[in-house]
Image (cartoon, rainbow, N blue to C red; front, side, top):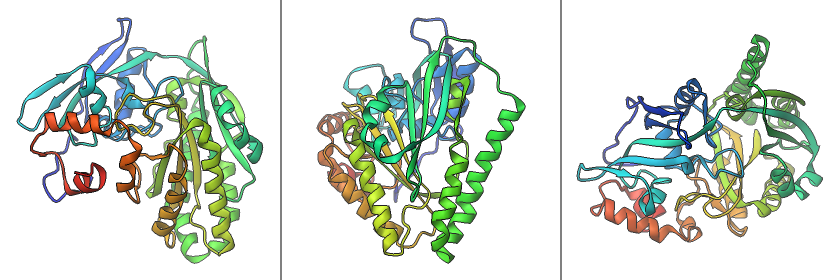
Amino acid sequence: MPTSGTMISLRRLTRCLEVDAMSETPSIRVECGMSVREAEAHARAAGLVLRSPTMFDRVSVGGALATGSHGADLESGCFSDSILSATLVTADGSVLEVSGGEELDALRVGLGALGILYAVRLRCQRAFAVFSEERWLDLEPTLEELPALARSVRFAQLWYFPFVDRIGFKGMYTLDAPIPTRSRGARAARWLRDQAAVIGGTTVMPALVRAAPRLLPSVIRSGGAIAVTPGARVSSAWHEFHFHQGYMRCWDMSFSLPLDGAPRALRRVVTYAERARGDGEFPVNMAVYARFTGASCGFLAANHGRESCFVEVVSARGTPRVEHHFARIADELLELPGARMHWGKHIPDAGSLRSRYPTLPRFQAVRARLDPRGVFLNRHLEREVLGL
């Protein structure tokens, strides 16, 4: 969050404090400056896997939790719902152990407004294998049947590439089978695909959106062919959760919709992209993702209280008038019933979101108890997010 005051970095708080692989509810306790990748590695060493983790695993555990970064499946809510207990340093310097009640549900998506989240105990599950498949599907029939499709598999994800009349689908099913080891060839192929995505997103696309936008549709189609590789495999759950390791700077915003409202949301993005193309503009020029999560207990979680589809819009840096277009897309999606924006992405207008969180007063009450003087607030949180 932007601030004119003091920022506290947890970058060096990266220790694994405990791994409990033997209890009925396996867990791992880590400091919140640790990356999701590092936490996953500690869990794997004990035969465990994080529950409903973020796709990108280089983000910090604390950052992913504070923003309600969404998870992987309809059974588990978002990553924040895996918190079993937390250690919080409050504004007066006290160390508070939180293991339930309203304090924990507020901490699940705290936006940094409650205190310093020092460490968390995260629920894990036994490591397992998955059968994973990728394929192209016809766009309109897939959108029509999207809620049923998402419920038909344990884990699901969709990619829409603008100006392509198909949609990429990735589905995973849990297996009662030994966890395979990836071959060198598989690791190399994944690395090459990730590097192609990074190079395309950081150099090729920014150059094209400025100098040769008319070439974008054909380039996007080629990029889609690289991103979606039809086929099936048996793999470990952690490899498939974090299947994409290409990181690039870009414009990115994400919306949570009730699952049954996802088809309308995706159609609005597709229609907007096509309409802008007719005007000679390409504001949606990389991809639109759809991921699915169960209901969250977090008071400020974008998927609080309902099964949700997260629709993510990604465009290249340097895209002309991108802020204008992102604001217009946000307006169109936020017209839909139950739409909320994901705190971890670009937010054109936070003020309009307050009415979308029925449990915001409960969050506010917890925040007032933990930080009555507003030490952990800033102008952005006070005015635009919390409406204080």
